Length: 599
Image (cartoon, rainbow, N blue to C red; front, side, top):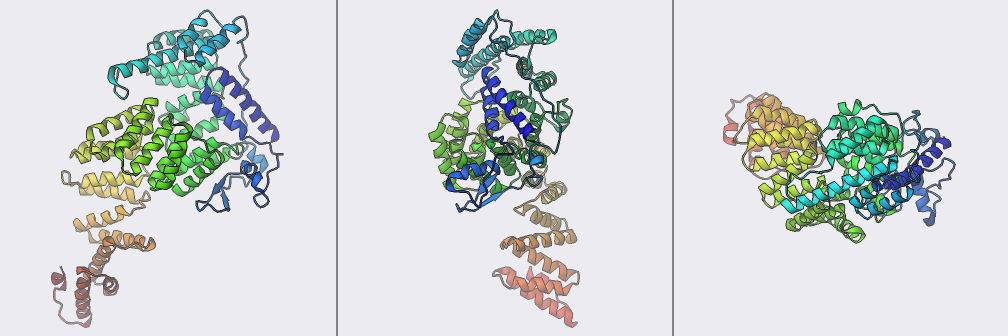
C-alpha cells in the first residue's frame, strides 16, 4: 500500500502547486497541510515507551495522541478501525478502489506567459481590474480563468464598498456584484464550446450560486470536482449547496479519495455526527499528522457534547501547532461551555499575539469577555469579526446571544436573522429567535422557531425542553403538547434531568397518578446515580410515598416515608404523619384521613 500513499503524496504536492498558481490560496494551504501528514508505511515510528524528549514530534506523527488535562506525561490514543493494519491504513475506506485524475495542462507559458505572470502579480496585490485588463486578449484556459476570477473579485470588492457606504459595516444593503451577468454569459459560452477547465467551472458554479441558480450551480461544481478533485474550494462551495442528505446522496461524484473528505465535512454540516466521525477516523489512518482532520474530529466530538474528549484533541493541536488559529474559535466555544476562564484567557492572549486581525481571533476574544460578564466588550469584538468577514456565521449567532444578555431584543433578533440568512440550517440562531420571542410574550412566533430548530437538531434535548416550556406557559397552557416534547427530550439524553421531573409534575396535574409515579421513580433513580439531592429529590420521595399509600402498597410507602425523615422541613412532619396512618391501617384500626392533616 506504500504505492497508494506515494500516489497521495504526488497528487497533493502537484495540487498544492497548481492551486497556488491559480490564486486559490486557501485550498493550496489545505492541500499542503495534508501533504505533510502522509507518511510512507516503511517510515519507522518510535514507540511511546522508548521516545526521547527530542523525538516526541515524530511519535505524534504516527498516531493521534491526547495529552491529559492534568499535564502529566501519560497519553491516550484513539484506536482506529482496522487495529492499525498497514494495508487497511493505506486506503481510507476499507479497500475502496479510487480513480486517478490527470493534472490540467499548464498553458501559462504559451505566447502570453509574460502577461499571465504580470496579471497574477497584480492579482496578488489585489489590483483586480488591472489584472483583468492585462489578460483581456488572452485565450489560454489559465489566462481566461484568472481574468474572469479577477473580474469576479473586483465586483465583490466594489459590492463590499457599496454595502459599507450605504448602510454601514454591519447594515443591510441590496448591493450586488455587477460582474455576475457578464461572467455568466462568458463562462456558459466557454462551457458550451468545451474551452473551459475545472477552475473555470468552479468559478462558473460560484457565479450561478450568487445569482440564485443553486441546482445548476451544483451540477457545474460536480463537473469541476470530477475533472480536478484536489480543489478543496470547489468542494466547499458544493457542500454549501447540499442542504439535505437527499441532495447529497444524489450527487454524481467520481469515487476519488477527496470524496471521502467532502462527505465527512458534509455529514458534519448536516448533523450526521456518527457518519462524519467514522470517516474522519479512517482518514486519520493515512493522513496521520493532519491538523485539519484532528480539528474536524474535535469539532464532531464538541457537536456530540463530548466536551472532555474534544478538549484533549484541541490541546494536542495547540501543543503541536502553537500558532494555529483555524478552528480555535470552536475550541473557545468549548471552553466557554465548560466555564474554563483561565484556559480561555490563555487562548485569547495567544491568538491575539499570533494574528489579532483574524475573524476567529476576534471571536475568541469576544467569548473571553462574555465569560467575564463584560457583554459590551464582547459585542464590540464580534462586530470587529464581522467587519473582517461579514459571512462569519458564528459571530452573528454569538453576538445575538450577547444582545440577549444586554436585554436588547431588537438587536438580538437582527443578529439571529442575519445568521439564518447566511445558513438557514443554523439551529442555534433559530433557537435564539425562539427564546427572544418567548421573552417578548409572543409564544406562537417562539414555537415556530423552536420547531424549526428541533427539526434540524432532533437529538438535542435542550430544544425540546424549550418548546415544552413554551407550550406550558400561561398564554398557551397546552399541557398534552408539552408532555410530548418532554418525552422527546427524555429520549434525547437530557443530562440535566429537567424532562423527567416536568413529565412527573404534568402527569400529576392531569390526575394521571400511575404515569406521574413512573416518571418520579425514574427521576429519583437518576438523581441517586448522579448523587444529586435537592428539592426535586424530596418532591419525588413525597409523591411516591403518597401514591403507594393510596394504592395499598404500604411497604413501599413506608420505605419512601422513612427516607423523608432524613430531611428537615415540612416534608419530614408529613412523612411522620403518613407513617402513623400506615401503622393504623396495618393494625386494622379505623383509618383517619391523615393525608388531610399532612397537606
